[in-house]
Image (spheres, rainbow, N blue to C red):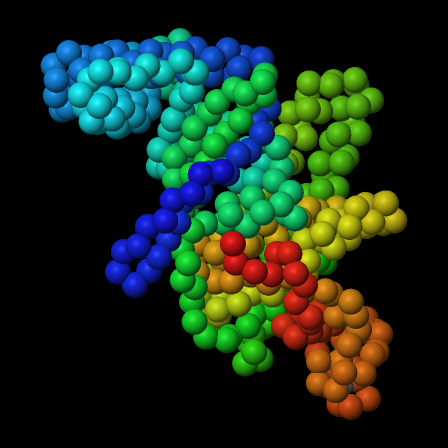
Length: 369
Ligand SMILES: [Zn+2]
């Protein structure tokens, strides 16, 4: 991991590199291998041209005739320029040459969503966007927290036969001040419930619609299974995954917007490890209930909140759905309403979010990177 401290004005930031394992298909592997060789070949040629001219040539992607997307050509030019600078410093006694293939994309050119990385590649001389499966980042891993920051360039390398994406990350060392807390409870019936310190609450997503859609997917899958249409099943599963991911993006965006509107500085969520457990357990025991990856939704919320300077803390959710937010007594909700002998009465799904605001913060995902 490389480190780099920068200071400008009153905000400080540092740049790190996060490695993510990639799983390209056979076809993607050969595309990447070709691009990586072209990339270092192009860069080496540019360096040699500049060294010969003894000057930093003013180049644009139009001057470079390689079979690479123009944004990638620009990255090769950048790399060549910094290599030329180094060679010049040493009086051109040693001209650096790249030997290990790699390829770089700038941050405008790729997107990353914890499960895949998408970026433009060259296929038959044409620029096409492709998505490569990435190994899901473990939430207990520091990388997950780091990736919630501003992302820089993406570099793809191959190391002992493994494909690795190296993403540059810039971490601000300043966060939003203030103490306004938003509790967020994730669930199946209501995908997310948020509650502020000032008693403002909002429900996000549509659990009923999700359940209906999941049933439709399952019925269709069963039908295709009986007809032994395996390719069609695979396509259907991908479609379902994309649909769920879209829903998670939408809900997480709405939650972070709600937090911004309410000047929230800290979002408290159930601990990710717990969320994973919950999802697994419900899959086993509630065959009729649809399943959902709360884990991904939690990652998306964390990621989007951090970009807005909002801290995300994990809490231990024990009893958060039973404890009365007003007096602390434990009650079980009946039907849709939670009511306590002390007089507190609210929608049952709201109680969890209210209690999560004050639940004990656990270590691990609780601190900023
Ligand atoms: Zn009470």
